[in-house]
Length: 395
Image (cartoon, rainbow, N blue to C red; front, side, top):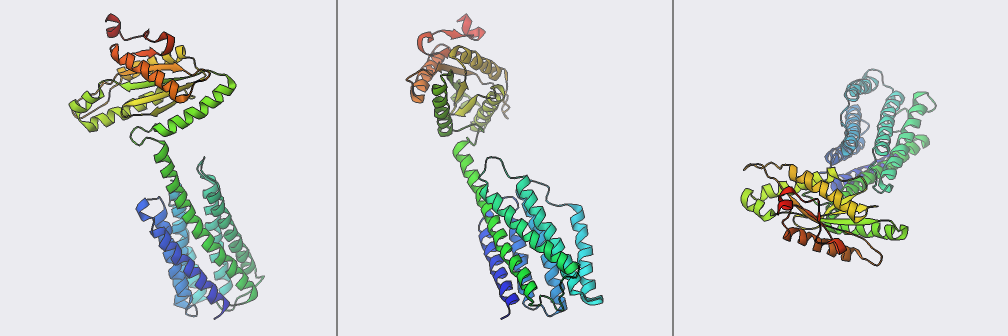
């Protein structure tokens, strides 16, 4: 068995493994993954055809598969990063490339020109992949997978670019396709080794996207889009530690939708879900950039207000209460208006997150008992209204 044949066999196994692993992730609906899988499949077909590379028809067919597979892989990377996958001129360029391959195979046979053209095309594809991965790498995600793919793509691009120059400018010559000369074996070996690395990189990116989804599910409440209870408390504890060291003010508000069961009974659970999402969205739009909101129960939300004493926190919370009361959530059975009751307290020395939340929760229940749709302060000021509604003021 010649060295080129052995290297082609390695490439074939790599592509088949890529198809198997990527195919197992179809159910995850990761953008671009199906294109990567199709690309790996076409590359496997290319490798099989290259075992019979003495036939001109086979060479043209293998080259066609290689050109299409490379373009599909590039489109897969664009789609993975939510970019427009197809670029018109790339499709148009495929026609002249394939026509040139046919010309240099049948009309005016030239192995060097054919190899230089394909290598130049593959160099463009690999460089484009590296640029896309680095340009659109998501902020906050682990960098390793993205750097790995970018480096693998750049190394492959450099191999193909050098091969394009070497054969395009006549520094080396081939008399037959994939002739086992030392320089050709070196180029083929390096190109073959970067292919599995790129396939592994695709799998790594797919798994990073799955990990991101799992982390989001563990952090973000799926219905409302705000932090879930566990994530909110974790962030609150971290910010409380910082505030305690800096001796800065920090307050928390517990907010609850009034008579939420009545909304479900009157309008249905789907309308109740929409009302929850609407209230969460309204609160999120109304808070300051430094504030943090989370859903800590069924219809209960918590608001963390850094650098804020409880008097100011109560006023800010009351402003949110008024905004929510004036807003409307749409439902098939009619418009749904929600009101909020809230309890507010401030972190003090010796407190824990649990103790402050408990005091704010007690203030919330006092607000409920006092007529709802209002904000109550905990501690020494508990029992005092903070800018109540007109209806409650009259009471």
